[in-house]
Image (tube, rainbow, N blue to C red; front, top):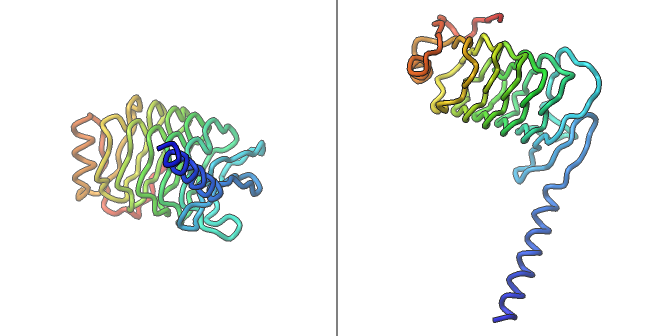
Length: 206
């Protein structure tokens, strides 16, 4: 029995080593990242003291596509104002931008399907978000306590919006097409204002 346990533990240790080898964090300029199993990248940290009015998150770093903004990658960053998200991106993880100075988030050109829990929580300067057609899930408190948030521009009908996704962000208006029944129903149930627009190509300024 002891030999069997020893073999199991040894095998587990080997698997752990292989797993960690694939997750080694690498720094390239202002970005740190890990390589994912599908040969794309997750940004794990943004570190720059340079004041940046408009930040274009790269679609590629070191020749590989950026698909995920990792947990707390931009959390607390106070040097950025507007963020443009790349077409390669598919996910924004938990707390990714929490407590940052971001004022406007333009995700509409991305392929993001999920915005994680408190991803933009306590972004007190945030006034506008522009969401992609591909978005299916907005997790709990994704836009929690963004008390200056005025515009949430939907380019698709989001399947899953958590009850508390916009908790403590009372002044936000949802800009939607009249066919976006799921978003409209959410806004009605939780008492958010909606503005119906004719085409998702319209621009909305906060």
